[in-house]
Length: 165
Image 1 (cartoon, rainbow, N blue to C red):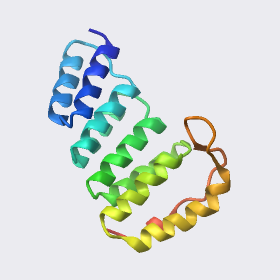
Image 2 (cartoon, rainbow, N blue to C red):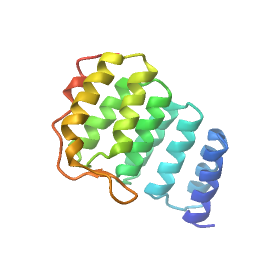
Image 3 (cartoon, rainbow, N blue to C red):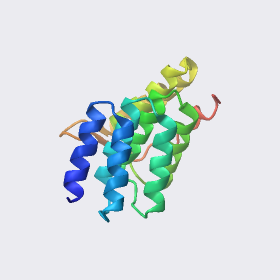
Image 4 (tube, rainbow, N blue to C red):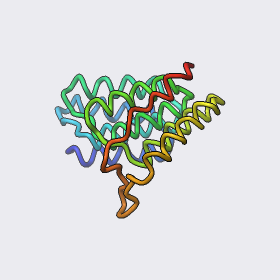
């Protein structure tokens, strides 16, 4: 089996909210010497998100980095959504800061995950501050095509730091 086959199996587990089976297939993939790619990690992170396993998602992301697989927008967004689903706003904020430090431009999905993380913790002030910051950047959002993205970097979202968990 190849990376595409294993990634497809992991994606099916994600859709079925079977994160443990997804992790098992990932382990089997590694045992067979098949190198995971960013897409593999994105679907594994999605499996964690759909099952409310934010801590597991952080571990998967750390393993990805340990293997030398560079995170991209898709993997960061999957991590942010997993953190948001588990009410881990502080971790989502830290991941977002790392994403910006690596020069990866956020998209609409990124901001949705951050807003969701604020909402899940009932941190309305932080959500409103984030939304205000997003409005400043909204003219820079490209909504054309299937992957909206920010083409001009926005100022750092310091507003999230003002609202510790």
